[in-house]
Image (cartoon, rainbow, N blue to C red):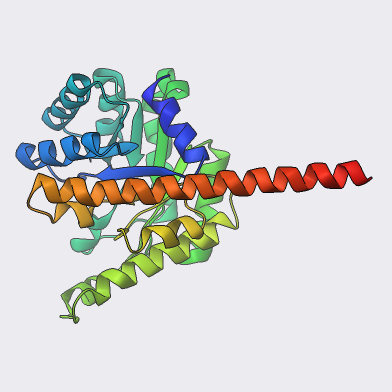
Length: 277
């Protein structure tokens, strides 16, 4: 079974975990630590920057370990995504995330997202059927616009949408106590997940400060995948990274078991009702 098919299976069973190395992380030593930790802890996928040297390193690590982990490449530049697919045989791409833009005071509108998606699709059209294409829904958009954008992406047959918890630059500059701002980001992305899951059929990946505390809430809100980066990237040792990712894998697997039990229970109830008719 191809890695992409294994990821889709985990996604459908609501037990997928994507470890995020970072859209701008081109520090090869850090990338190797994060990717190798994700491999050893048996994460479902790892998300890296769309840079040739980063992709080559990650592909080598996955090949040498004979891992089932799916490699996803992220960028907001369609040509970078297309090059990853057409020239480096990447099978999963992500348009997003937009944190780097927010830090520069920039924003992204729904029409701009659609335009970038259309451009990317045109560049990978010969391999589209083989590729998993994920798109980040900008968290700075009002929820009604997020829903509208998600519905348009669904019509365009995008495979997966990713949520984010947007915090303004002003909020980032405020010296808040402890981790309050980061908890706010998690609350926002989980809230966005809940609303989107009620309005579209697309699988949802919940990202932005998802960690071992907030991950169960993300799954409860309707996530099929959790994307975890900051809780891993800030760690300084591989042992620490392995510990956190392993805990996240366990949380994701528990959710998969719970969802499977719920499906079986509903199926049994349906069969019992049918037999009574």
